[in-house]
Image 1: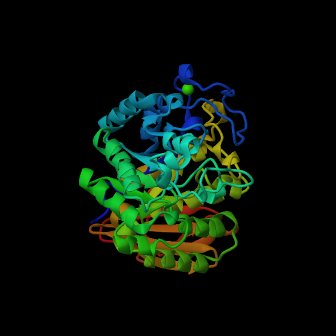
Image 2 (image 1 turned 30 degrees about the vertical axis):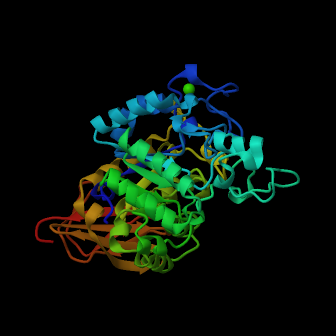
Image 3 (image 1 turned 180 degrees about the vertical axis):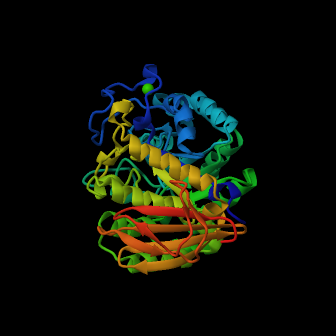
Amino acid sequence: MRPPEWVRDAVFYQIFPDRFRNGDVSNDPPGTRPWGGLPDRKSTFGGDLNGILEKLDYLEDLGVTALYLTPIFKAPSNHKYDTEDYFQVDPAFGGNEALRALISALHRRGMRIVLDGVFNHCGDRHPFFRDVCARGKASPYWDWFTIWGDRVSRDPEPNYACWAGVPTMPEWNHKNPKVREYLLSVVRHWLSEYQIDGWRLDTVEYLPPDFVREVYRLVKEERGDAYVLGEVMGVAASWFKLGALDGVMNYRLRDGIVAFFARGEWSAEEFARHIYAVRRSYPPEANYAMYNLASSHDVPRLLTLCHGDRRRFLLAYAFLFSYIGAPAIYYGDEVGLTGGEDPDCRRCFPWEEARWDRALLETFRRLAHIRHGSPALRHGSFKLVEARGRLLSFLRLSKGEKVFVALNAGEQDANAALPSPGPWRDLFTGEEISRRRIPVPALGFRILQAFGRA
Ligand SMILES: [Ca+2]
């Protein structure tokens, strides 16, 4: 099976629903805090699916074609990785009808949506786990979990398997076929009844590989062009060999982005070697279906790692938008939202436009539109041209199109060698270039398209 074609054309946008936009104050949970306060582990700010719906014009104008939402099913926490009901969208997000409305509005625009599937564990308020707590071994769900002893106990520590030792997140016992059947029914339900466009599978590395493969097969059966994206922090090669995923959240690529662009620790040569190693460890079709990210709800925002330096930050995103795989924008990165480790990286989107970095937003928009207009950037092959000092340049080549990208992660202006005299057109300025070298400003980039007989 092959990854869906639409993924290589996609620009993703990741939303943490409690923090993107509050589109309906009537569903705000008790204790909702004023929008824009600093988040802590418990805080809720009232964001919901109607808020996303209200901002589809904004997202479409930015060049976004697909959304990835962190979990939306009923759960007590603000992040909702502790599912209470897999068949109900949380009432604080607007319930099932809000999801239906959002999906139909997205599909009318030709946009897609990927939901977060948390199938390693549930929350301790899930009715099956509560039944086990109440009735012990008499519960029909006793062997749906892994419990050591005759009764569920948390004192002094949980006597049941739970995710990362967190007592509120009991792990499913995937050895039990009934558990699998139940979780697969969740996978099927949202694909067939709501026409979602894919699943992002949480903590794939904790799941039994044959279960992930079952999920993958079911997804493809239900919707041939749905996307299965895995959260894999390490090398994901085995998952692709197994035929269990289309792509992964490319945290390994991000490690290189942080080291080269944000921290300035690596030379261009080290970065080139790193991205080559990441690329070579996966099948070609998986590389084009990667979810390439710079920031997420689990890591500090890239702008914060760049110590607020817009040039380094944009350079990294310019790389993502011109590289193999789908670029992903973490909500708010495009207007200059900052934040350190979780929960600080989950701040509210600032909707007062006076707080936006307009130049940043405009550059994101340009990068997205350049990518949408360029088959070579989306589908083309990759050819390294130069990795010298802090200067990296490469070609993206497709049938009929050639794009040259030069990224200068150094503090000094540099000159990049063009692989042919052109003529070339600078896709940002429109300038026509017919020579063998071009200046690339310190911490700046150039994206050129060959035209004529180049
Ligand atoms: Ca709300």
